[in-house]
Every structure is written in C-alpha cells, then in structure tokens.
Image 1 (cartoon, helix red, strand yellow):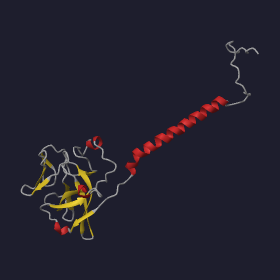
Image 2: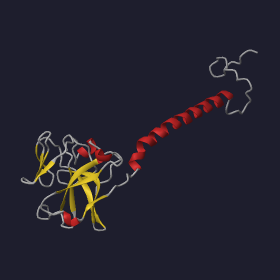
Image 3: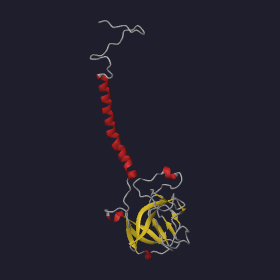
Image 4: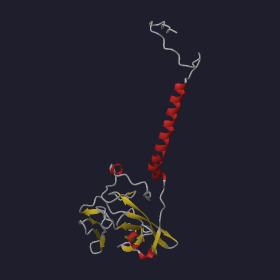
Length: 219
C-alpha cells in the first residue's frame, strides 16, 4: 500500500503504528515511556528522601538536657569562684568529666546579674580548648598553652582567644545548685548556642560559624 501524500506539504504521511485506531490518545510506546519515568522518579525519591531526612533530622531533634547537682547554693559566694567537677560525657569514666568555676551573681560587678542567680564558667579555652585556671590573686583566668587571659567575667583581655569563655546553665532545685548544658556567649556576654574553640560569636559570625543542631539552645 503506497503512502498517502501529506495534504499540507506533499510529503508522504507517517503511517499509523500497528494496532492504532482513530481517537486513540495514548500508544503502547507512550505507556512504557511514562511507566519508565514513573519508576525512575520513585527510585530517585527512595534515594533522596532518606538522605534529606538524615541531614535535617538533627535540626528538629532537641537534645536531652543533663543537669547535675554540685552542692548547696551557700557553698558559692559572689566574690570568687569555687571549683566543681561535673560529667559532660557519661559512660567513659574520668575522661568524661570536666571542671567548672562557679560563683554567685554579683550586681556590683555586672548590673545584669542578680544575687539569686549563679554563674558557671567553662575551663575550656576559646582558642584551642586547653584547660584554663583561675588565678585568685589577679581574679583572672589564664590559659597555660598559648597565654590566653580572661577577666573575672570570662571576657578576653589578652592572648589569642577569639571570644569569652563558655558558660553552663545553672538552677537551684530542692536546695541543690545544678549545672546544665554548656553555651557560648558574645563579647557582650549575650548567650548563644555552644560553639567549638576558635569560632567567633555574634553578628555575622553566627552565620559563618553556625552552631551544631545537636547543641542545646541557650538559656
């Protein structure tokens, strides 16, 4: 059977596929093409969704807050720091413990503090994480590794540290002073989520050094 000329340009018309009938809207080839695309889309969703969920899940997962009693509130005065040992990583013995310096709030030093609250300073230097020591004679925190120096409130006064010393949340429960999650502070001592040593805080640095989602929110 000869091809029927195309009425528009005179070229032979393309023959209808086998099994075609007038009014048909989808051919067998189209059905297989759509089915293949659908199968590929389902396979892509099956791969992408778990990866996206794994990446975003920590953002919506609020970590457990561990609180540990360190003694009576009367054991801590407003004029100096008292050492206390807490557990920051349970289950690994002494390696999971750290020392904190704790005092009562002192409005004479910082008007934003009240005598009913407590300040707990981390001993991890904000430079590279070396343990700092509180020097009572000078009322400063000193890092023996690289010469970092912090004042009585934990703000940087010398050396390479990039921000004030971190702090821990505090509360009084059933007559016991308790230490909670760690958090970082800006140069104005405004609380933010905990950062790693060497990371700045405040302003644009909050975006350049975003906090890990697994850290507890600041108080």
